[in-house]
Length: 555
Figure 1 (cartoon, rainbow, N blue to C red):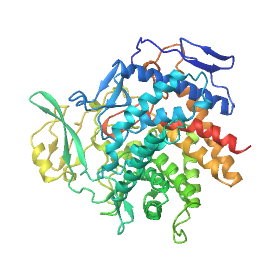
Figure 2: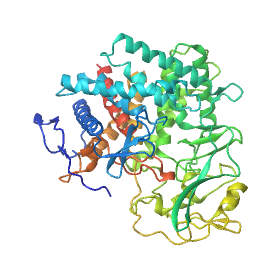
Figure 3: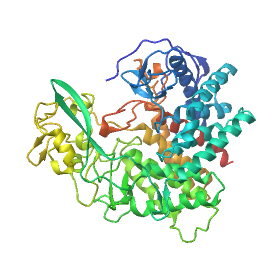
Figure 4: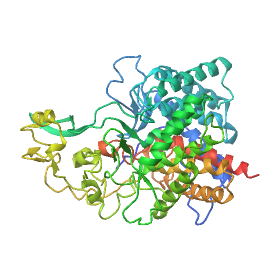
């Protein structure tokens, strides 16, 4: 549980039904049954987000309440970037991380939507602009980094967002546009014609195992016996818009080919979906072994919530790009039909609540069966297999039936087995026992693990994607359906998950400057669970902007 902090708060002008007034305490709006999410509510969210990020900027500038990643203080040349809330502090991430574009991206989004924000002051604009350009400057070198597929997140969601701000001077605009061009060329080098996809990861998959050595707790990673050879993750769909934003036909060819192969290989159907109405996205597909799986998610055949968001949003950008395509699309699949099916999946999955559990299967009574099912038809390893109770907060339950697993030692490489020989886990039991692998011991976990976390970042991604499609589609029925579902999601996020919607108690997330609570990042590694994360705020802010644009498009 998060502790309550007593911090100085930058009061902002928050919209209420009574108008705009200065508040020293967070304004708590009670959800109104049946109320449709409105443009006024979207503008209020943007005003709240502006005030929150001014607060976060102030904390970071004055080095208050910061949780710095190890290595951030090694040199003044290392500039670490706000990413999430950890240990009731603002967690700063090292350079070259996939999330580092979102912080300046949030600031650019707020700057470019200032006309929708109440109590906008020139001092606010100056502060946001100064911080946005400061962190943007740290990302120029990323445009040359060919070891990652995440350039869409890093560059397009920062430099690209900056180009939407009308206050950007001509020289800076030209520099940012050049960085984007260089980044596209770099991203294209990760594409192989014989495979038809952009390779996601170059690193070798390893399993984190916790050991006791000389009485001290250690955490290290161990290689697998059957690593992937050409992994592509569904997140990569979010890079395609970056390529589509260029007029170069080759980039369009790469993007549409990637979308084509992903649509063919990255989807499965739940066993209960006998009519195959609701396609679900695997997180990863190995185009070397021809096997799918979920590096993130409850199990290799489960519905990781944010992955469904990357899938939906990615194909929204594909369908939008079809009208401006610089290549012949006659040989490609019906991407619009695929997107319509993905909408039915998300709509179906959200019937139990507009903000999903971090994996849609995590709250099922038999969720443990998905976690423990290692099929020869899928990738052997996924992150949850090595997730021990001592890696996460004592109240968190990753999935129903969470318990120690007995795995096959053969999933690890011979080199790893030799390194682990004779070692014990944090529970004091031998990790390798014959042909068995016991990373978390055999004793039942404490019954304090009760909360299966949700993921507001996934919900925000859905909403942003749905509004975007509703704005440009000419299909009247789909326009109404997509927007209606987005409204439901946004009403839920606004009424229950804004960091000021905690009743009379003060929440540390509000005091630190975050907008949305209860996001979940990387469950398999025990990281960023049930906590604010910058990219959740990024897509929430975007969804509010797109709501306003959607309503304007109807007039």
